[in-house]
Length: 188
Image 1 (tube, rainbow, N blue to C red):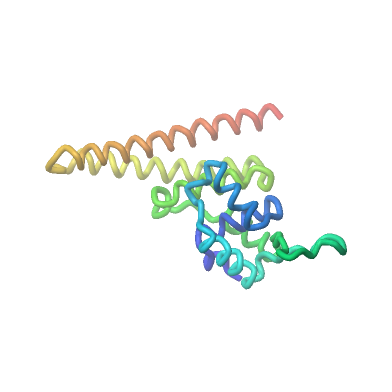
Image 2 (image 1 turned 90 degrees about the vertical axis):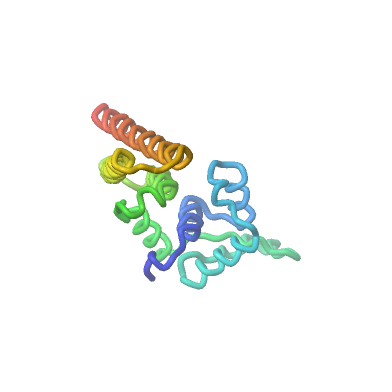
């Protein structure tokens, strides 16, 4: 089962289920009350994605607890399979690539969040360093483009300035986070 076959949304669902077995309702609540709301799916997207994960053998429905667990509407709680846990770890370890740094910045940050209790501090710092390296290259490329291109009017220049500001801020965050985690590691 290749993790590349999963959509970004399916990877996020699988990661959340690996953190804690969850029902569809539980997952919808997570999306509704956390910054993950940018991924907030409709019921028409969430349940088919869960079903696809189940069909791929990455999650399974927990057995009902106790004899009285059956109800008119059975709550389906999903838990990861061994294959699901392996696919999740593979996704977390996917290298940051130049082509994905801008487009998938939110996903890279989601991967960082999900690494906390699974990876060593060295692995997390290595991931963040690769993110910082790709962000630095992107910022340099955008700065070069801005310096050498006549955008013709004010709005395109302002939009490019916004993109530069966002990526510079992300780069500064990555550098500060690497420093903080490195300092924490040396103290322990």
